[in-house]
Length: 95
Image 1 (spheres, rainbow, N blue to C red):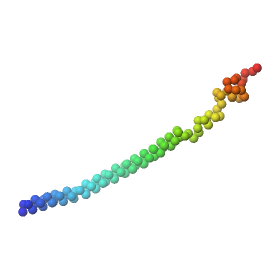
Image 2 (cartoon, rainbow, N blue to C red):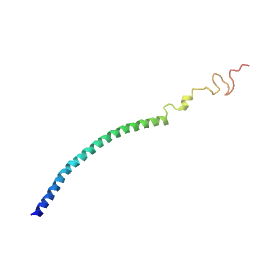
Image 3 (cartoon, helix red, strand yellow):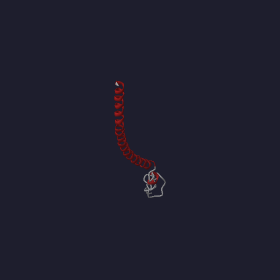
Image 4 (cartoon, rainbow, N blue to C red):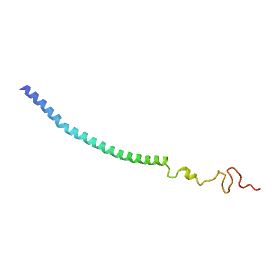
């Protein structure tokens, strides 16, 4: 009879621990879902930041108005401003 009581006690302890397992698992699943939601938000923010950085990088690599085109109309320092002289020649010299 004592042997049966011992086995009954062991079974009750095992059943009790099994009953607690779903609660523990449910808590862990809830925590994981919260972490996933937080990470999804962070990933969304990071994707937006990456997209902005890629746009900025493209603009730095390929400006919309290349430097050569910006300087084309600027003849200052080329020696041909307002006259048909060759570069370095003084076109305002008289005589």
